[in-house]
Image (tube, rainbow, N blue to C red; front, side, top):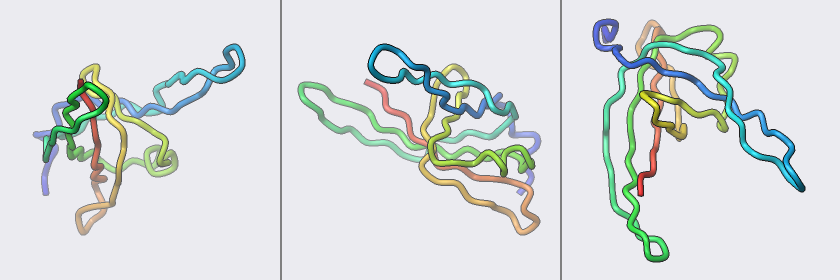
Length: 110
């Protein structure tokens, strides 16, 4: 799997560093890592809320494996790609030589 030429998206891995505000905390994300990746839409569906129709989309993101990425992986991280923020659903080490990480991402658009 050679994705070097197809890795055309600039991807920022975001970490939540909540800021105290009033009686609670407000989410504040900071960039933990910037890399290039290959993003592909793999599915979508419509779901209904209270008076709303939401489009639930799932994406596949493949990035080159890096030590900083491996050390930072946690379930509460997000990816920002082209000014859109994606929630990480799963990740896995792919390729027999372990050169790439594959993420399953979700995005919700109203």
